[in-house]
Length: 232
Image 1 (cartoon, rainbow, N blue to C red):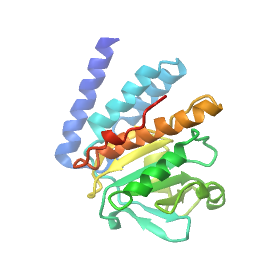
Image 2 (image 1 turned 90 degrees about the vertical axis):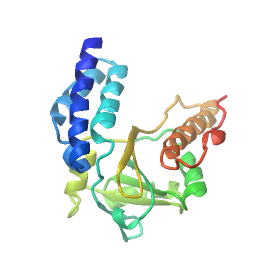
Image 3 (image 1 turned 30 degrees about the vertical axis):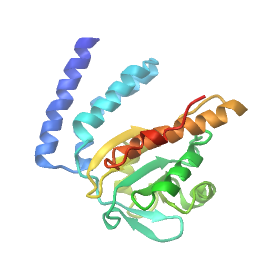
């Protein structure tokens, strides 16, 4: 097993050196031998080997996708306007969901709290893989500091967005981009616990800390560890 991991890590490292030297875009980097990654990842999760699945995902991000330039996508907003990423001019946290994807209790609340605190320094964007009508049913969960957008295969011009993001890394996924759209990190997001009264607060705390940890890599001049919530 260790030998497999070393071979795979070496493979990703080679791709990393290629991608960084050529400054390729995210949509190009994700295509490099992606079928092999998808096949290995799906096999790992089918077997219940979540450790290997996480290793594969983290290796893909660390050795191939981090450092690439995120494509200058334009998203449709819930208010009818459009959001072009290159017009934002500050770090971005982009989180992808779908209306049919059950979020962890406290996940939206945690994101709302952080957006309220840091929206002047970081742009918070939630992107739903849905038609507008479905997105609007759930968009009210997010406060005014979060820009809610949507994209769908059947909408004009959304095909490249869906192909690059939804049909590759799926959801829920969080993308951490610097002010120049350079990919700093990509993570799975959402902490889910068995539903009960006690777990609601714990879920909020875990999601808050997870998003805050990701936020800290964008706000490198801020010490955010002191804002981590205690888990009871």
